[in-house]
Amino acid sequence: MRRRAATLAFGLALTGMAAAQDDLGTPYVQAFCVLANAEDGMGRLYLATPGLSDAIMAALGENEKLQAETPDEKPPLGDGIPWQSFPDVAPVCEAGRTVADGDRLIAEVQYRFPDQPDGNWIDRLVLVKGQDGAYTIDDVLYGEEGEDSLRGALANALAE
Image 1 (cartoon, rainbow, N blue to C red):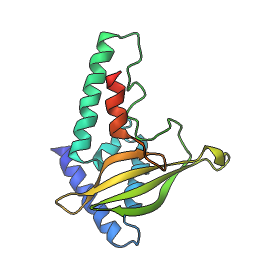
Image 2: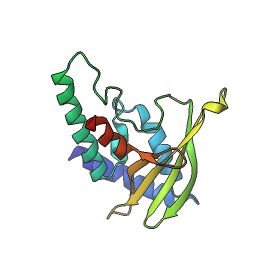
Image 3: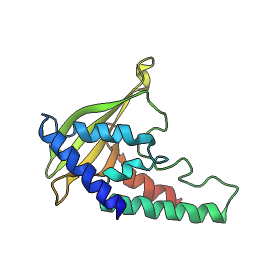
């Protein structure tokens, strides 16, 4: 219940922020970037849809079972939830452009290495509007083309 209330409050706050800006995706990407290391890497769950949250929690449960069965081996999600396409920590995480895709928004997350621009990359958040009017993250599309995604990575990690 506490998490639900926090998600609602956070989402409503972002809705107000977004209404004042030309780019609706910017505050959501900013929050996504800020929450990268919050709560041992789980802070971004506050921004997720119930469906994505459930998929993450189910994957973590399966990951724990695999860890218990083979404690000497690193489990598929041993590095945490793959919220981004590369495990590197970029010094700059910021919003790019946002485009409407039907009822959803696709917001770019730009990861930058100022000293090594060849290492830069872009992922995209799939934002859907809830009944309360706040957007939440329903998936993360990896790369500019988005052929792979967070939901796919969760399913593939545990299918191996």
